[in-house]
Amino acid sequence: MKYIFVTGGVVSSLGKGLAGASLGTLLEHRGLRVTMQKLDPYLNVDPGTMNPLQHGEVYVLADGAETDLDLGHYERFTKCVLTRENNLTSGQVYETVLSNERRGDYLGKTVQVIPHITDEIKRRIRSFENAGNADILITEIGGTTGDIEGLPFLEAIRQFILQVGHENAILIHVTLVPFIKAAGELKTKPTQQSVAKLREIGLQPEILVCRTEMPLEADVREKLSLYCNVSLDAVIEARDVENSIYEFPLMLQEEGLDEKVCRLLRLETPPADMEGWKRIVHSIVHPTHRTTIAVVGKYVELQDAYKSIYEALCHAGGANDCGVDLKIVDAEEIEIDGADKHLAGVSGILVPGGFGDRGTEGKIAAARYAREKGIPYFGICLGMQIASIEFARNACVLEGANSTEFDPKTPHPVIALLDEQVDVTEKGGSMRLGAWPALIKPGSKSHEAYGHTEIAERHRHRYEFNSAYRERMEAKGLLIAGTSPNGSLVEIIELKDHPWYVAVQFHPEFLSKPETPHPLFRDFIKAAMGR
Image (cartoon, rainbow, N blue to C red; front, top):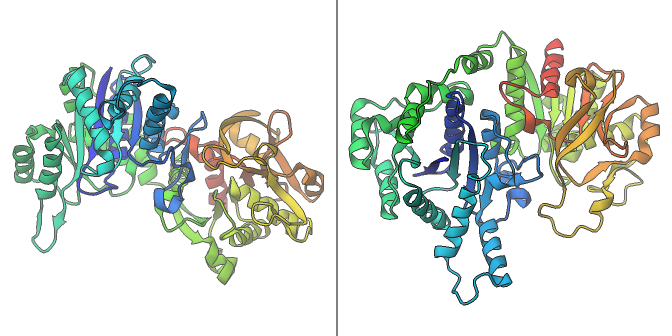
């Protein structure tokens, strides 16, 4: 197996994950099998208990692992089907080492960062060798070079590269080359300092991926090459994409990144055939039609909080030759101003997942607005629970209907805690997580979208539709369009007399890719276009 490590310098949020995923795309189009891994230096065991406003969305894998949002990039840009082994945090590393120590695995030894922590990191990197399902592992190290918490990971990869040899492992450093308007020029010093910090600990990047607003002229490239000790053809320009992140692999191919990587790793492959990818990008960037979708959420201040939602809408737009204009609406603003002020004129309304009661009444108002005005509505996870509460209150006249999450004493708990969740005390990794099967009702909008009656979708929730209210709500026009195989859990609800009103308990956005948009997102955009 060949190994590619991706580090970042100068500032965070430079797009290391996107760069790694884009490289994975190019290598796959060269006929290579790729898998990807994220090493996160934070001490949380996983991001499942973090506030989305701080960390961004929690991306859920098929096996139920709650992971960093970069794993969403990995799965969207490549054919990877990732597991919990593909995301490693400092919390997991220390938890494993301390568990080993308590068990007596290190009897007689002092347990230290080097070698015990670094050895555990290397073990997790090497674990992909035996699987035999990939030619290349691309590993992204989270954080920024120089962060104290990241040092064990950098030391581990220094040792790893030394052990496997430079023909089998390379380091790519993503760095910022800022444009200073007052001086009218690009500055290379931040990158020089970042690379110097790497070299202090024994790491020399073979390739620089330079995030920049302006073109890297020849003199700037030469300066970076000379002072950072990389070859001139390994200074890769990564200018901000104008329209879509899916243009990024094409930009990196023009810069010769994949060709350089293959040469360094002694890989003989044909050039990447990106014609199909170009067609997808063209459909996203140059659509014939446009539609406006309101996303009514509670974490709207941070774009990454709903990253997979936005990407799935983009994929669905491409499938319909339609540009999707997002109107991001804070649910609390609807509580203050009313739905009409914020939602008038939109062609579709999407209510995504979330936790806690903040903004829920605004989301309920949005669901009612969509139901009564005939606007296509797509509810996801909490968005499905919100739709159920709204329907119970206003269509079934069940006064005070609510979720026990928001009102434990509600007279009509149409959404209630799962039986197996009642005695749960630990918050981390204890929800209904991962891929679960469901059966779709023939003739429903969902069946029309999926084209078959059996599906598997990824979940992340504690509360469910209370089946005690099924008959009363069905009598008023609610359609139970999807259930668990034994029929006990409601997975999808629809409205019979509505152009397109679908709400699901799972997270379909996690299965959407640019080449294969999720069918529910695709049909939601199609319905919005019809409006």
